[in-house]
Length: 430
Ligand code: GDP
Ligand code: IMO
Ligand code: MG
Image 1: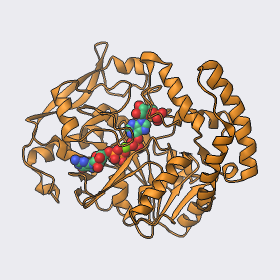
Image 2: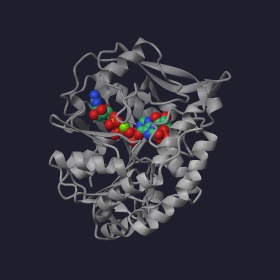
Image 3: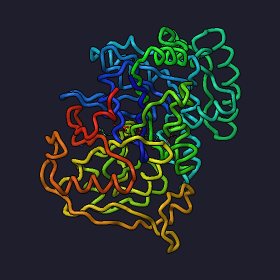
Image 4: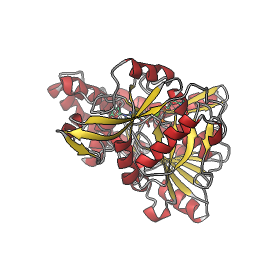
């Protein structure tokens, strides 16, 4: 029996979906605890590709209950569409549970996200435009609408009326945009509420009781630690707690109930949206990584910025997550490069820096210092064991483990569920 947190160690899209899916095969519960439908988690089983934004990936497995807990901001329109798409593909979605405490993403959150971004000129964050920041801002200001209110028609009508009066002033007076129509929003969102109500429960108690009965729980982190609201590259961050501690905050499960933290890191680095990225390659090597890795956003389709592996950043996220072991993913994407580079430290104002600076002005000045390693040309996507890999690929992986000061438990050598090499089965044991 184990409770395992899966967490992104870079700027998101590290293949958390694939790692969670691997663990979910032996899990009883898979739990989303932070963020919203700004997340895009991909699972590939045979020829079937599944993309999840709001529903936890565990829903693909019989016997797994997929749980969305308090720390999530929840877009009912996206959930209903995702549910429909899953059912059309024959995935029974009756094992989904949603917390009474999730905050609802309303249409004005999406609208304000885009209006705020457009007003920022060259200071744009490059958000996903899904209303995430404004929904969390309302939560922190204690004016948001929670699920328990949303699924109660009378309470919802009252809260909607309060909120829409306030936001319409902001939308029209500050941004000069058209006001929202209260009646239209009520009609559309009441229909979602009726459809969602049967899934709603007290998920904190559900998970506590499950844990007491020795259930296996996987906590599906969203985004990446470098996008964390506190520990990330603020303000070029998202608005939730992306680090492993977010699993406790977001679910109501205490830290002593977490057994292991599996960090997920790409064998190189990507980032979507704006913000500092010391090892970014704005050249043909970066373009080649993007094409070989199909580095286009799962949620927005935007091309991802690509660069070399940054051990300064991942050593930092190993620390802030208390990582037990790392899954290094997309190793196959580096096939065919004569030479590979790993950033070992930065130079900032001529000084050697080994600790990741989270102040963006400082990070913007960081000049990466690289170590060069020989690459490999063999196709590694059918490799089943570490020994099947060319020695240069093994060296590359071993060097990452050394530099980030964490053991590696798993390698990804392709998109499919079965394209994984397990280095430490005990670490991944549910
Ligand atoms: P997540 O947000 O962390 O779940 O990651 P995404 O799903 O947004 O992006 C990861 C992308 O890499 C997806 O398209 C996956 O199908 C793909 N992927 C996952 N693991 C591997 C791997 O080991 N090799 C390759 N080539 N692709 C992978
Ligand atoms: P997954 O779970 C990659 C980035 C956005 C933007 C910043 C803020 O798939 O790894 P937001 O809409 O959250 O206010 O945008 O955060 N971002 C992600 N980048 N993967 C994600 O999720 C992301 N979620 C947010 O691109 O730069
Ligand atoms: Mg993603």
